[in-house]
Length: 231
Image 1 (spheres, one colour):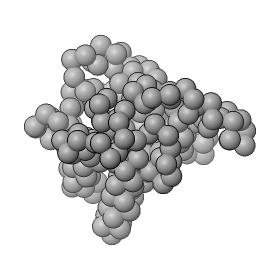
Image 2: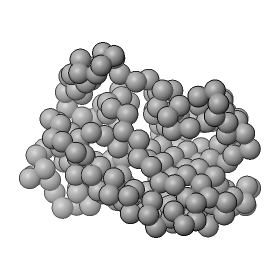
Image 3: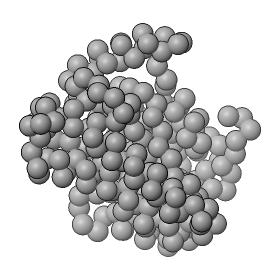
Image 4: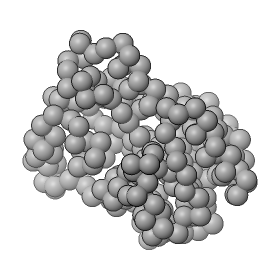
């Protein structure tokens, strides 16, 4: 990690909800390595938690970004364009499924619930990539987060398994499409981490315990461990 530098790089981090967010752990490492960061928060409820963290990161850009709200995502990228004129990397760390659909069988998932989960958790990454592409004039990197439940059945992960599988496929296709421009696209799969989003999954503490027991080192990665890999 010490050999890596992000000095002079400009990055956009989407998905910080609080100090326990994977996105925040990554942002801390990005900043420590010299990157200048733009930070978003989902809405008024999360702003009081995110704004102080953005201050710690000395972020010159902090804006609301609810991908379900028309125009907000575009406004973020327009601000990046105006202030920086370019973007070197992007971290997409957002996912959502309604509790009703997340706690039910995939067979019982509603059409509207499936569409919402796919839009927020998967298609939003496509939209971000499209907006980032013209700003990555010298190449760049697009990062998102996935989970093992995309490949194998993980009890209680339910709807998010198929959604993350779709996200991983999107990563592969966009990586091929954007490679000629020097833009890399990656999905990180760090294993279960206790975040606000994960708290909505039934029996998540049990998933954490089982994962730690199966890991060769018998403990799970920390937020900044994930950030070190992302960097």
